Amino acid sequence: MVKLTEPDDLRALDTAALEKLAVSAIVEHRRKMASDQIVYEEWTRVSDDIHTPYAVVNVLQQEYAERQRSLCEHQKFVSSILDELGYIPTLGS
Image (cartoon, rainbow, N blue to C red; front, side, top):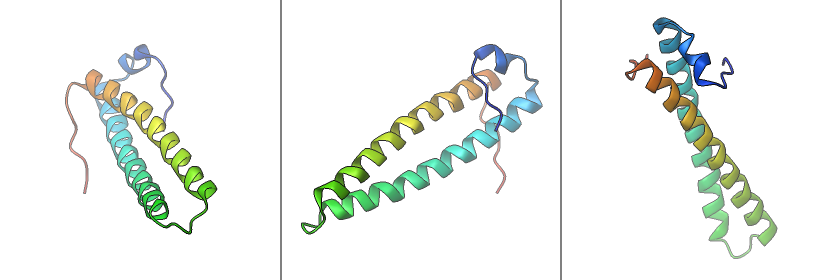
């Protein structure tokens, strides 16, 4: 994916490029969410097991928290693309 850091970077793109970038960013966001869900489910599963060492639970908790911070940043990126595009593009199947 193209790394854009400034709003002007998005304004420089034409509609077709913005739409392609939006679709790619949305697909990536969904992939990240699904991956994060797996970590969350494992964290909650081991948290309920009294035989799991605290260090393991803590590592998974920290991993999940970091993933959520990253997901939040990515959501801001997706949002800025959609704001510039002005609509949510149709995603392929």
